[in-house]
Amino acid sequence: MHRGLAIGLVVVAAVGLSGCSLLRGESGGVPAPSRSSSATVTPSPTDTATSDADSEAERLRESASPRPPTAEPTQASMPAPTISTIPDGTVLAEADVTSPKGSVHFHYRVVAAGESYAIEYSGFTSTLPVPVGVMLVDTAPAVGDGITYHGVGDHLLGGPTSAPAAAASTPLTGSSYDPSWLGSIVTYSDATSDPSIPVEIGPGKVLAVSSVRWSVPARTTNVHPVDGGARSGASGAVTATSSSGAPTSYEIAPDDLIGDVAARFGISVEAVIWLNHDLRVYGQQQYLYEGTTLNLDPIRR
Image (spheres, rainbow, N blue to C red):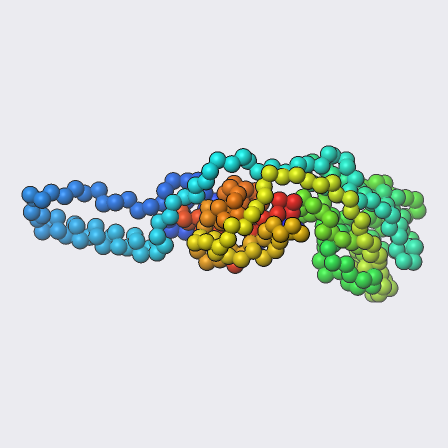
């Protein structure tokens, strides 16, 4: 699960369902009846009625939680998951962009900035009578197409210039730890709807498309998932692997438990959550949401 990962949910440790608890919260089990019994005491009619009522209440509590109680995840002691960072200011990509007709020109470079990246623009000039925007995308459109969405690092470069514009920078929010999946930089018209504007530079029209040549330093991590095979509580399928055969994504099956999934891949529950910032679990049993995909690739977390 990468690219700004796509489960589209926030990290929570519990959901407001009956019997829910925090990931490492208190037990959600139903307490045993607190009354005591004695072989020498004959229950009165009142005692019998109370006992029947207690039994009925117990049955109702059990029917409200149809899944059998399951212990919260346990695991052998493992170090906290980590991944190496790239020194701030390291340049990962850099090039000049010129539109096919030479109307727009600018220079860009992508630099490391903490645990993320930023794209810097300089030398922007334009002879077009409309504002010009720029963004990074994974699948490139063609010049003359209309954009259907705004990609990563979307930025307004500006309108027509008489001199190069001042340098500007914008964060590559949503690019993941490895931004090299963003294969193209797209320049487009940010014009408003105006019948006097030529169609080829109208709203959202693609003005230039350039491939991005990346040079991303290798990263190191202490999280190395290895598929130990399907098992109870972790019976889903590995849906993608790396070039070396390591599992990189996993589809959650019915009744999958976070602790069992972690054990299947030889990593900690903490690492599963670290790999999936938008992960959700529910209930005391820590069931995962069937049909969603877990990311297992530390580089694309």
